[in-house]
Image (cartoon, rainbow, N blue to C red; front, top):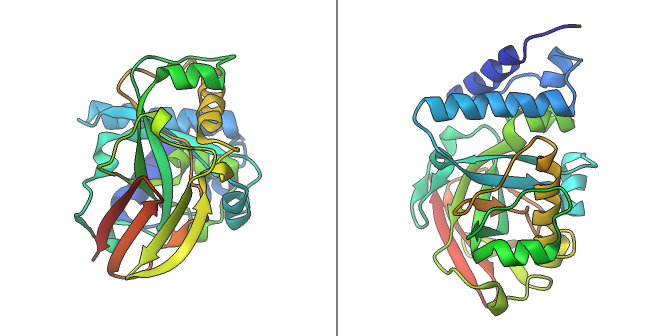
Length: 259
């Protein structure tokens, strides 16, 4: 079956804009595979930038086993980060702008120098990072009921929703990224916990994986960009209004409200 990737891209843009889910792209377009799905990502990234948005980094998702189990995937996904998806810490977010969102806690890294694979090592990653920030990603799928295979979440830009960066940047030497506990609280009650070691043993290793994977598409990570390596805990549904407090022990807390 032949099809135009721009049709897939347009369908996903419309679903995002209207907050109305569609059938899985891999069902509507059965020939869609991981490589063509990434091309759909690129088409929508190019569309966003042409219409005033800005590419500010990259994300990795479903790297932790708890996340793969939760969403029925056996392989990480990845996507582009655009400035329009970033929300300020401490502000209120409308539940209505999403379809079926989940809250994740993860570290984020800001680069001081460029990175390009293949054969990038964790040492290369450490040398390239300026600082780390605690971050929230709200993931959201444009696919009905999150019934996704890898081509579906890839074409949907790694199921991105929104990103909140915390206000406590730290140098890597001030953190223990292979063993830092993280928690999610909703209305004061802990609803999920995890550890940064769940992110491929160390989130820095996850960044190396992402740089090397995206080098297959000739992508270079640039100084100043934000890199998100994936959640350290199982994502929690964001189903109702209330207050979220998301924290890494000994590092920082991110608070936001859902309307």
